[in-house]
Image (tube, rainbow, N blue to C red; front, side, top):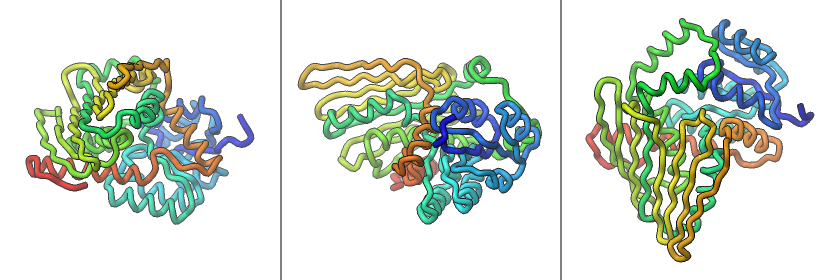
Length: 346
């Protein structure tokens, strides 16, 4: 391990920590895992044993270790209080998306980070997909954006066997799982927060600010689908779909048309470790580019970017401000859908 590695603690040892963050940290350059914490003894000590680090059942105990930063992988409702504790202890914070359970709480977390002079990065890992990074760089070639269409569809039946094949064996505390199921029972709110954070951060990354939202919701049983439109600050139009669950395969993509060309993105379920497939067409030159990136772990690249931001005092990507903006759009969608498509400003 490099001497200048960022010394990291992970708060929360549940599913997303075990399948995404901890495996990424274990192979990341410039990061050293020091300790993990979770109120569950089963999770804290079981996960710690797998990584050969200290396991704590108290956040204060974890923060008592010599750490530079923490990664918060606890439930959304705990992001603000845990983030504030870490910032007050002088630690930089990488928080799983969404940044908090509400835009107000996310804004408070961002303000606390600024006041403490610490880094705050939100875990929207798609920004660290090399295909998505290429697409972002190519956006300037398209000129003024006329239209963008985004879809994000999570499978129902096919998700479980896919995850079983790709995920490592998990340490499970059945009491914790049952308790968290109660918080997830408000399914439409839970799904929109979980998936909307990703969708709207990606849209903002590529096409800029969305100035208004009109959205409607359809659902049948456990299946929910939000469809909506928005206008860009430059006058262009955006349409989006967030569906969970669908009776088919995972589907995620974006189509963007500008005055000079077209950009197409297709992204796979992230645990396949495929970089997003990007196609850029420039109308004036009849040029079409389809770069290849090979396999990539966006969770690893995310934590490495966080470590570099700390080491070089560079901005985080995405920032706390980006996290707030995504949540404001999510809340605008919920408000608009509740009013059957009324226009709402985020």
